[in-house]
Image 1 (cartoon, rainbow, N blue to C red):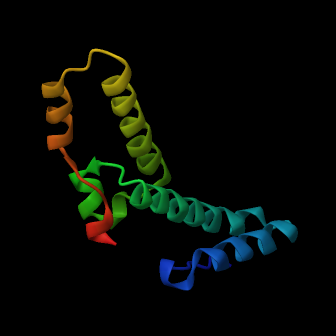
Image 2 (image 1 turned 90 degrees about the vertical axis):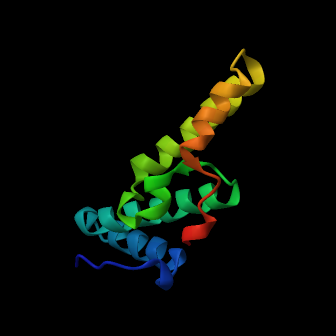
Length: 108
């Protein structure tokens, strides 16, 4: 009940534990594990794809929430799409990247 598992225990263990709680009808116990698993997977995507993230996100572990992960991914996709397909100027793109870190790998 209320088990908190760290990244060191593995994402697969989080998923299995959440599945076990869900199969037993214990949705309340599964919710935090599902959130942790989703955060872990989104952070993997951010690291593997070298998604630029805000400096605060890269430096502070407590900002690694699902919504912040999704925002970082969506912002990167939006800006890359704008950069490639519209008239987003090189200077505007450089201004945006100046306020982001190159990638998250330095923190994990």
